[in-house]
Every structure is written in structure tokens, then in C-alpha cells.
Image (tube, rainbow, N blue to C red):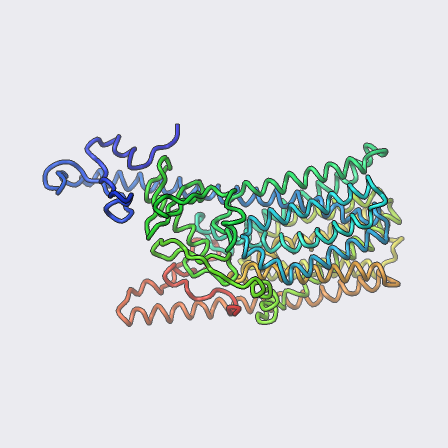
Length: 620
């Protein structure tokens, strides 16, 4: 039986309580707040005496229990939406990464490396000039849906190349171009959705945003890498079980997984991020409607809220009544505002609801301006440039593993069928260690030291491959250990490093994650073509990975220090404004700092004092 509105349920418990009638225009007489009066003497409408102290205490206890239950339910809803996104994203992307690993063996060395190089080249250009604008224009959810749908074309191109060999070159290259465009689009959108979920999770769980970033980062990394392990294991198991038709069956299975996971994105909550054009392109998939009076009723975290000239009410039949609806509306606004602040320039195309609960006006912007903010962030914020060495270590290292290690060490000296299993061991180690490093990052209260350790893993992996002859490395135990070593570095990059990006650039999430993909994608593009054309890719690419790793080891502490300085400067600004407000006769509590409920004891500003930027300077 569906839950009744709180006003109805209370009137049934206490028959002497009734609700005020609404005005003819649909608004209640208190401007959106439901008013209940009791029949009897002494009230303008016949109300009786107020409830005694025991009734007030009982109501307070009931309200506390209800608030706790509601908070737990919303926490589960935020986490379930995030995990649904992570599973769909990871399965779809896992099919692509498994096919990239098979490119050289399935398509041949020339077509395989050329297609991978083209994919990463388009991916890099998209991340640089289009992805940030797409996430801001259409919203994170719609960008994820479209990007994962286009990714399916890349998967299908392998099936077409198998069934029609005469079309393999145009089919695979077209798939590589579209796959690169999809890859450059989905990662910044994933980062934006991840950041919104982290803000919502911190809000309902009562933790800091940094702690939420670390927790969700580890969950995503484990899910993403587990899905990749599964797809790479299938790429070795299916051809082994059916040698005659295994490759065709594999491509069919991957196609089905890619399309179903892309469709699954339609089921996640957008968290209010529809972008400036999201209402036109994606409204059919959202459970929104506009009431005859012009107000917008939105389904948000399991509740229907109405935003109309400052009012926020629960829909008929929704548990919780007006108080819960107002809380949901405040949470929706905080997601846009980053805890009450005006939305950042690239934050989703729509200005946030103001503190009075009014409906949000739309924000117009130039598509080209949004696209170039990724490059502008790199040029203006030194923390962004300090991320480059780690991204290059990962990007060049990935090309080194796929282009040299898998072919020149594993396949040549252990066996061709061993490539899939060794690749699975690499990703499996990354999945396991991502959870460990995520917990360690939360305990340390920062990610810089762990990210530096990931760079050490990349350096050792590259140095061993450069110094030790390939035939001496060609043993099962050695290649598995080396794969696990590289997997440690990848676990750090997928989890802790991306969590640090969300920590360092809270006001420029889309631009920051676009830079991650721009830098790593550029490095992978260069690495694949270096493997293809260099006379000795072992020395050339291996040395490049080692140099980038050493630079990353030095850069991470500097980035962490800059972040601490930015936080100290923001805290100082908050305190000055709070003191100024107190001197001017306003409430001094508006500028005070309160200690957040976290293990690290991080200081957080109340909503009234949260106008100062957290992190680096704003990008104009």
C-alpha cells in the first residue's frame, strides 16, 4: 500500500487536526508551508490549547527517527545510482579495452596499431575541444548515454570486419574514429556525474566531499577494473572453448554487452544535471512534468518536488510531506550550487535554485567557450599542469604494455594464448589494490603520497623491461609479477589520482577531467605510433615511461601543497567575511567555521559562508 502524505496520516491519528484549505490558485495560505489547526476555543478557526510537553517530546523523537530513516534511504539511493552508472559504464568500456588488446592479433599488426592510434588521436582531440562542452550542454547522463551508444559502433566494427573481410579497413577505421569520439566524450561526463554523486553522498551521509570522493573513487575503480578483467578473460576463454567459431561468438557477445549496458544508463538519476539543452534532447526519459500553474514537478531521489515562486511541496502520495520535499529541493539546489554557491561556469548549463527555493533560471553560453575551458584550465591553474607527468606515465605505459610487453615478451616467450590471461592478471591486481588504496587515501586525508607511489610502480615496470632482456622475462611467474606491478600503478591512476582531481578542482570538474583524458590520450597516441615506427620501441617507449614516472613522483607533492595553500586562503577569506559581517551587525554565525563529522576533522563552511571558491582560482 503506498504511503500517505504526512498531513493525511497525522489527521487520521488525531481526528481533531485538520489542514487549511488551499487558495483557488492552488497555493496554500502560508506560501507553501502546510498549516494545521485544531478545533476548539481560543483559535480563530476554533483551535484548542497547544499540545502538552509530552506530546511535543514525542513529536520531536518521531521527527528525529523519521529524519534518520530518510537520510539512510537517500544515502542508499545516491550510492545505488552511482553503482548503476559504474556497472553500465564499466561493462561497455570493458568490451572496448578488450578489443584494443586484441587489435594486433585479430586485425594484424599494421591495421591493429593504426586503428588504435587513430582511436586515441580522435579521443585526444575530442577531450580537448568537445567533451567539456558536451557534458555542460546536454548534461552528464545524456552525454554518457550517447557516448556509450557510439562506443557500440567500435565494437560492431570488429564483427563487420570478421564477417566481411573486404571491408575490414574502412569498417575498422570508421569504428576507430567514432570510438575515439565516444571515449573523449564519456570520461569527462563520467567525472561530472561522479562529482555530483560525491556531493550528494557527502550531503546525506554527513561527511566531507573529500571523503566521499575517495570512497566513490575506490568503488568505481574496483567496478571498472573488474568488468575489464571479465571481458579480457572472455576474450581468451571463448576462442579456446570453440576454436572454429570462437572469434565470431566473442564479437557477438561483446556487441550484446555493449548495447545493453549503454541502454542501462537510461535508468540512472540525472541528479538535476540536464544541461542547457537537456530538456529538449532528454526530457522524455526524465520523470518531470510542468503543472498547469507553471511550476515544475521533478522526481528527485525518490521524491517529487515542486519549484514555483519559492514553494516546495511533496506530491500526493509521497512519504514525508512538506518538510521532506523542502529537504529534497535543498539537496537538489546544493548539487547545482556546490553546497549553496552559484553554479560554476561549466557546471551544467543551468543556474541553481537560490537559497529561497525559487526555480532556477537557465544559463546560456557559447559552445566554443565551453570547449576551450579545458585548455584554459591547463594554462591558468598550475595544479592542472602538475597532473601531466602522471597522465603521461599512464598513457605511455598503456601503449608500452599493449605494443611491446604483450607482444614482445608475453606472446613471444610465454605463448600467444597467455596474453589474455596476463592482461587479466594486470587488471585484476588493479581492481584489488584500488580498494586498498582507496581506504588508505581516506585514512591519510589526501591522495598525493599514494599517487606518487603509483608513479614509482610505473617507473620500476619500465626500468625492468628496458634493462632485462625479453627472453629472461619470458616466464609465467615473472610476467604475472610484472603485470601486477603495472596493475598497482593503474589502480592508483583509476582511483586515487582521479579522486585527487575531484578534490583539487571542485569548481571546474568537467574541464579538469577533460584535461585528464587530453593528457593521457595524447601520451597513448604518441606511444602507439612510437611502437609502430620506432626501430627499438623497447628502449624508446620504455625510457619515455620511466622519465614521465620520475617527473610524476616529484610533481604530486607539489600539487598537494598547492591544494593546501588554496584551502588555507579560502578559509582565511571565509573568516574575514564572517568577522566583517559580525562588525556590521549581521549574524556572526554566518561566517563561522564548523568542524565536519569526518575522521580527519576537516573544516567545512556553512552554507551562508560558502561563496568563496574552494581550490584554485576561477577560470574566466
